Image: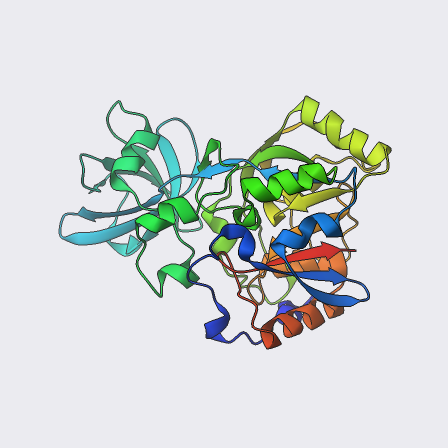
Length: 341
């Protein structure tokens, strides 16, 4: 499909720069084939059924944004994907001033060697010293806010709390699974009282999620890879949910992409561990999920393509037009949508 089919006009004032407070006070647009309905995140229990299961991503965002120097040149690095205990793939700002074999000083006794330049222009950075890289990042790094937020205001201490979900447990993401930012202990308790189950999986979200689609046709876009894991016990419980007539509702496109990567053609979710580069566009046949809770996405993005695959392009174009007209807040810190095909 042509990428421009997924374009739409979004006023810049619709981009949220801070989350709703409290988190579950955000609005929620429920999208069904019959059309959109205005609701709130706190209404979620009434839109689900006893026996349904929400699936969350328990990845934890690390402070993966680094600012440093190589001689007199300023170098910015956004860690993207772990290679091993000391090496990370990173997108580099001012990359023309960095050569393989040179070291970047990020301050706070943190430095990294530019070990290799990859075909896409990113670098492999090898961090020096004996301390775990996660310790070094806590000392020298900042939270890697999406460019559409970071370009409008500086990152601050509030973001260390705001850009982390209540399920965050396993270090490794450089972007938050933002649909889960709306959840609070009170909302989880209400869901439990309504008989709605929860499960977690792990997908370490990479900075590639923010890369623009530069191709004119979706067939020519190369999707970024991210590491994920679903253990056997979780897969068994999710399969039991559907076998008993419940629905599996992914919370966030990251959870959805991993579930679909793990699913067999017959819809059975298998244990999974490894990279996934699944790219979901209209025409895709969903196997593992029955619905999706997600935020509002960028025009021409792979994520808007994904929700259009789930609900239909015309349905999502109408839903987004409704959201814009009714002042919904977009992107990572914005409002939610519940998509029920």
